[in-house]
Amino acid sequence: MQIWVDADACPAVIKEILYRVADRVPLQVTLVANQLLRVPPSRHIRSVQVPSGADVADQEIVRLLAPGDLVVTGDIPLASDVLKKGGYALNPRGEFYTNDNIAQMLTMRAFMDELRGSGVDTGGPAAFSQGDRQNFANSLDRHISKIQRESAGRG
Image 1 (tube, rainbow, N blue to C red):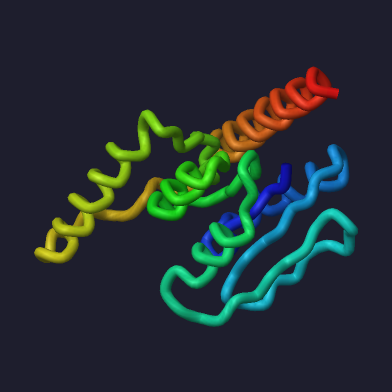
Image 2 (tube, rainbow, N blue to C red):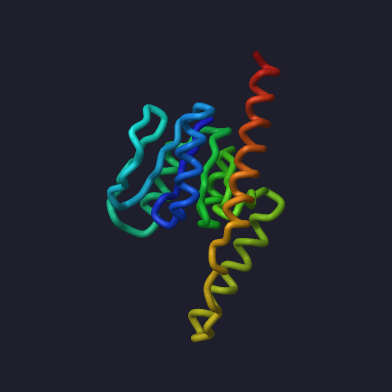
């Protein structure tokens, strides 16, 4: 399993958690962004810069993703594409996107886009909290442990 990060909008504290996990487990963590990213020196961490443009980083992640890989993203359409390709998608607040919840999330996103398009101020997401950070770390640890147990069972 590899971890792919939709890095343009990923909070710095989440990247720090992923950097520590990459070397501790070890796992390959790849950050994909349309800007140059500095990452710690590690053979398990790399960044990929893609050209600017709408959804270019998302398309690159989907292209490179293998079934069973994990993608960290807050982008619901990207999460949907990841699930269709057999990957796992986790948002920075520690919530997994699943086949059971993705359709509802896509519908809500479209509804909110429509409201904003008609001039309604929908506000933004809640501020990123210490609890969100902890939820992410816990969800990530549980997922990695589950994958490791499954791999050990096959080996």
